[in-house]
Image (cartoon, rainbow, N blue to C red; front, side, top):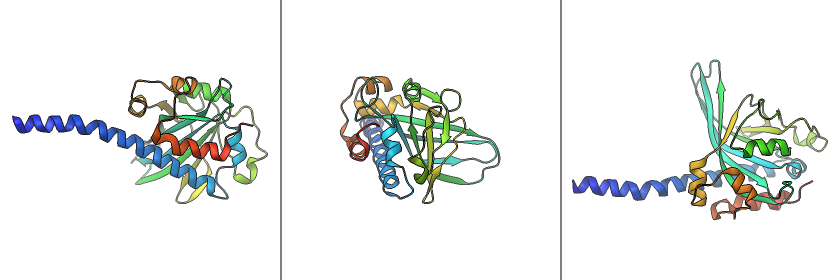
Length: 224
């Protein structure tokens, strides 16, 4: 009985720490993905990042399916501060990614996804807590670095990219759904807090999220 009680107490102490370490790891991996893509000649164009209202980074999204399957990942959303979302980059928000897929898909794959939210309309939809591409916001495969400077389409809310096996390019994500990861946000901020509150309330950047936010502000602090 004493041994069982000791095991239970250990689990009570350990589980919150494990959950926190997963959140920290997600932020660290997202920072590494973004840093890599910003440093590539064919990576994310700085001009597009300066125009963006928010950015979503999903590191190592895995797809495991035989026959009918799907893709599920966990990532980070960072938006600009201010009512018009034209300030510097603010505090990170934990988000999930869920896509359904039909058809034969054998084996597993790991892909990094980056999404640039280009309109206030798209940002508001995402910050509402849940968004489905195509239904709630119009998405398009992002232009290449060479074409990005001339890109300007007010009808597109989200530009989507993927990076797999060293290749970075615009990606079609169909009807992918994104939602706030409330449990992870609570772990990160130490209290129950929603996505809109983090951005509109100008929440202080938690220490684990500082490298990611600093990287964005160093690269494209000013909004065009």
